[in-house]
Image 1 (cartoon, rainbow, N blue to C red):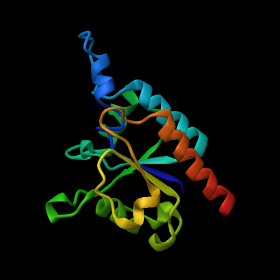
Image 2: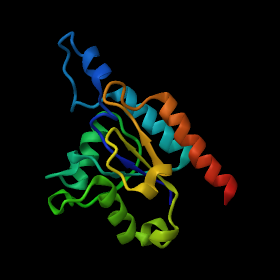
Image 3: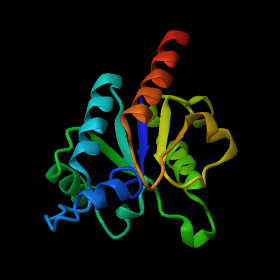
Image 4: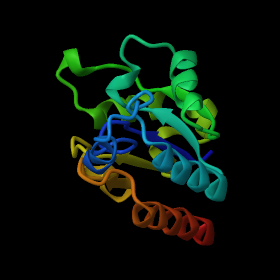
Length: 162
C-alpha cells in the first residue's frame, strides 16, 4: 500500500493562505481548500492513502480528523494516525517509524522492506533513513503543485523499479 504521512500546519495552510484571508473572510478550519484539492489529485493519481502525522491529531479521533478534512473538500482516504511519542522525547520521524512497524498488515510488508511512502511536512524532524521519502514544504507557501509533481515522480519511479 502506498501512503502519505501528512502534516497540516505548513502544508495545508501557510502564510500565503493566511495573507489571502486578510479581507476578513471566514477561514474554514484553517485549512486551504486549494491545497486540499492538490492533495486530492495527488492521491488520486498515485493511489496513495493518508496517515495523519500532524499535531492536529492530538485530542482528536480519526473520525474527527476525517470530518475536519472532508469539510474543506478532502476526497482522499485517511486510514490512520501516527502515535504521539513527543512526551517520550521522540521526534515525528520516530512516530512515523513506529506506525510503519506496527501496521505491516496495512502496508503489506515487514517494516524493514516497506518504502512505498512519502512524508509531507514543513518540519525536518525525521529519521536519517527517511530522507528519500521526505518532501519538505515551508510555512510560507505550504504544499505546492511543484511538491506534488516531485512526489508523483517519486512514486512513479518506484512503479518502474518493481
